[in-house]
Length: 161
Image (cartoon, rainbow, N blue to C red; front, side):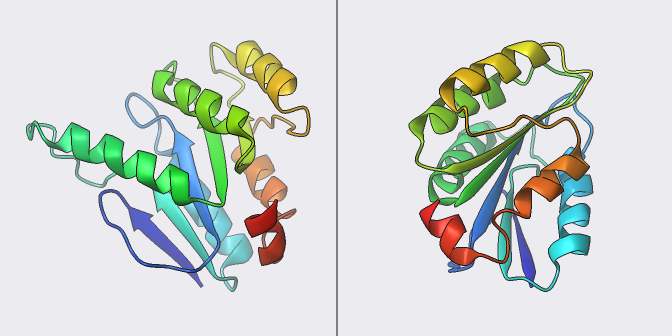
């Protein structure tokens, strides 16, 4: 069964976990679409999805940003797979940073997807190819779900790479 944990919530969980890293501000709600696609495809498999997009972000609460950044950092660190999605509508500067940090660390399985309308697509493709030649950059949320087939249903591959 798939569990979705939305920021700033947390759970103690032993399921294989996937962090949905990608734009939130000035971007479509791609997380909702991807969660639906993953649930439809892998609904009977035990997985936890960490979703940093909050249904109701308290924009006027000055402590909310710190809480959000800390939540994302901690959940990126404990995730087994990080899915990066660079959507059109924003340059996704934080996602670029996260891809550099976690993608280059080699400590996590990663899947990288880039919307065909993303302004810096070629940069993401080239940098990923140089840093992680084992990772193919895909260009749709459906391709991300297909890429997950390599890992989902094989918990030992998720945990051990």
